[in-house]
Length: 105
Image 1 (cartoon, rainbow, N blue to C red):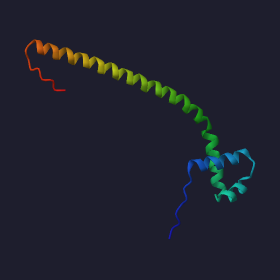
Image 2 (tube, helix red, strand yellow):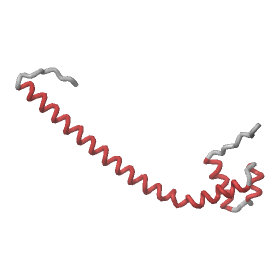
Image 3 (spheres, helix red, strand yellow):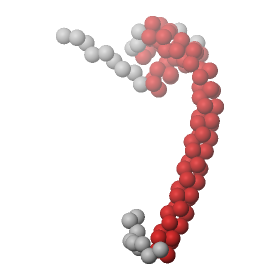
Image 4 (cartoon, one colour):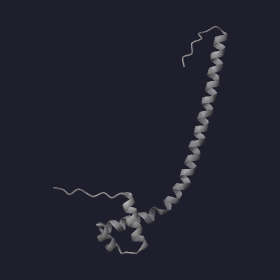
């Protein structure tokens, strides 16, 4: 019968990796304290160091993405306003011409 693999939360991984980077305890000490294999701790530590610069880049990317989404929202509101004015104009003109006064909307 196979053994089920343990899955660790990202919070736990980051906590253990930070402890390993700080160097207060050695990797074998952390391994025995948290019941995790030392190679796993080294892997988490390496991943944290490699992806640390990405954390600061994500802040910039989120600001530009937010600005882009806000610009898109503004454009869509402008189009809605334009279409509403056109619809009202056409409904008014059709009423003047004696066409159906029922509003389908």
